[in-house]
Each structure stands twice: as C-alpha cells, then as structure tokens.
Amino acid sequence: INFIDIKDYEGDKRGGVKTLSVIFGLKISKILIGFGFLAAYLLAGVLIGSQSILWLSIFLGVVQFYLVNKKTYQEGYIFAVYLLSLVGLFLIIFGVLK
Image (cartoon, rainbow, N blue to C red; front, top):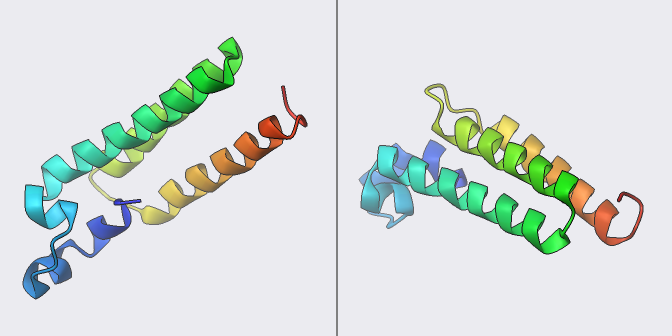
C-alpha cells in the first residue's frame, strides 16, 4: 500500500515523515513498490494453482508495475486495478469463478 505515499512525496519530505519514497527517493521507491505489486500478484496466482489465473496474475502485476512507474502517476488507476483484482480473488475463493 506504499503507493499512496508517492503522491505525498514532497510533503512527506518537507515534514520529515519517513516513508519508503523519502528514504529511498522517488524513482527507487516506485520500482520497489512496482515489484511488490508484481510479487504479490504472482504469489496469488501460484497459490490459486490455476494456469489461466497465473497468467492473469502475471499480466495484472505487470500492469500495476507500469502504472506505478509511469511518468504521469495517477493513483486512481492503481486503485481500480487493485480493487477489481480483490473482487476477482474473492469470487475465485468463494467458487464463483474458476
């Protein structure tokens, strides 16, 4: 959830708030956050155990990595993909999707 701190980078830096972005710098923190998303999606795909879900998870992880690291950062898109992914995960867990 560290992606929320990206938009507040300047304010956190001025205020001395120790976020990932302030500690490592904006560029490195965006890469770390993007890889965190990719790893989380990959892990979810592996744990679910379905080949098609694994490929979808990889795709969504790459999309999230891109959205976090693109030049014009827009948090809304990241939230949208994240929330839709959570809905899909719950539907898979409760047997609605396979």
